[in-house]
Each structure stands twice: as C-alpha cells, then as structure tokens.
Image 1 (cartoon, rainbow, N blue to C red):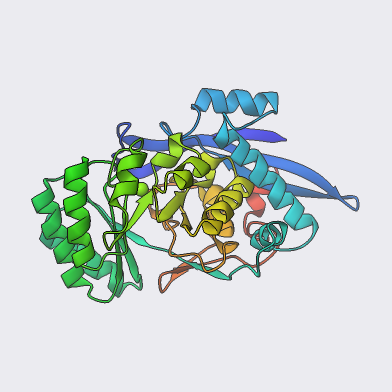
Image 2 (tube, protein in one colour):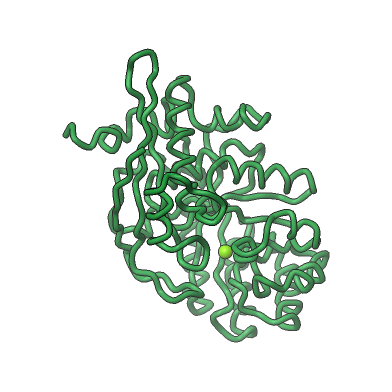
Length: 343
Ligand SMILES: [Mg+2]
C-alpha cells in the first residue's frame, strides 16, 4: 500500500457545526494485487472530516502503521476501498456488482437517484433555487433549514413546495432545533408533504428523535451516526431514515453492513459523501448502487470542489448519477491516478 497527500479547495467555504471548511485534505491510497503476473492497482481515498472522523494526523499515522481500524474510519475507508477496487478489477467486474454479490444482494443498479441541495436563503431565493434544480432534472431536493427563526424557515419550506409541487422535498436542520420547535417544524413539513426532516434535534437526543416519529413526516439521522452506532439508533427507534457516510463508517463494506441492518429493521438507508474527492465519491456511488431500490442519495457534491483528483467520470442526468462502465471504480477512467509515474 502507498498513500499520497492531497488538498482540494472548495469553490466557497462550507459552514459546518465545527466551523467553516475551505478545503478537503486527505490521502490517495493505492494497493497492488497480482493478477496472473499482471499488476492490478486498486484506488482508495482517506479524507477525514473534523467532527466525524479521526484527525488528518491520526489518519496519516494509521495509514503509516498499516492498521486502520474503527477508531480511524477515514483511514480504514481508504484502505478498504482500494482493496475492494483491486479485487473487482482482478475479477473484471464493476465494484458495485462485487459489493452486491458479497453482501448477498443484487443485481446492482446502473444509476443511482441523487438529490440536489439548496442552502439557506430568503423564501424567494429558496424557491428560485428549487425551481432551477427541478428544471435541470432533479426530482428530489433537500432544503437546508435551522439558520433562521422557525417562522422564516416555515415560509421557506412553503415557498419551496409552491415552486416544486411534484418534487420529493426533504429538509435538513443539522441539529439546530430544540424539541418544541422541532415538533412544530415537523408538523409544518408534514402538512407540506415533505418526505423527511434530517437531524431535527441535536445528535445525542435519541429519545427526542424517537418521540418525533409518526407525525406524518419521516425523521432522518445524520450527525447522530458520528457518535452513535447504527444498532443503538435502531434500538432507540430514533429514525425512519439513516444517512450513511462511507468515510465516517470506515468503508464500503461497513456501510453496506449498516444499510442491511437498517433495512432489516424496516429503516431506509441513503448514502452521502463527506464532500470528498472523486475516488471516494465514486466509492459512495458504488455502495449506493449495491443497495436495492435505494432512495435518492447525497452524491451530487463534486461541484462543491474547485479542483479534484481527476475528472469525474460519473455524470448526473435527469437526477440520477450513472455508474461508470468497466471493472472496479471506473474502468480505465482513473488510469492517471493508478500509475502516477506514467504521464
Ligand atoms: Mg445532513
């Protein structure tokens, strides 16, 4: 295994609960396997995200030691994705097909529905942005809420619905509300026929999340999974939908295990990136393609980066992201990354 550091700038700083991030730093991971005397290289990416995974220093240390584990999920993701890519290449199948076979599901999908995301803005601007997304082919749009007073956010939710009467709409509060506000906002979202509200309460309030369920709109958890195991969330009956991030869960294998556990409990699972480079985004795409009938996923994040590890070979058309042809992550499309010395 070898790994090389990279830094990718965002097109503009992204506000998070842990402060704004301006770039994504991580490691491109390569593992080699020998297929009948022919060298096969598998690609992975370890891009830690503050608040969700280990630090960049701990990630590097785990990769150097060669023993990434559950305490270093980004490092484990890089290694596990690279190995899975190499294995899929050796057996000449797409990564999603291999993952689906390994997890006893399948066949994998050729494309995955993806959602557009609309950030905080005035009701009018929110409506315009939603309309623009729907016109460009997305049928699922997620509205970021929680940065304004509840009354203002209610107006935004209504404006978005008026702008897109037929779209599936979701809201994401990123843990901004208390229990009382969350209950009021979920009632409003239910009335406007939203599919679900993501993280209406802080990550640790499993009891509160469980109490919000059943009011006519789904409850999704995202930040909660940074600090609570999937099993604990399911035991607490705290969610209708789990938002699974392969980078934070330790790799494609762990993510599919989590998705299966969720679905066995009657809970939906969607896959999202952690604003990663193209290698990890493709990894997340293959994971999602291996989940039967997966709802729209948060994979359309490439445009948030000003630069990337390589050109993105997975176009989005009509609200779906196509899985690239060829073995492994993307056939020959990432050749330049596999053989950095060649060009
Ligand atoms: Mg979220």
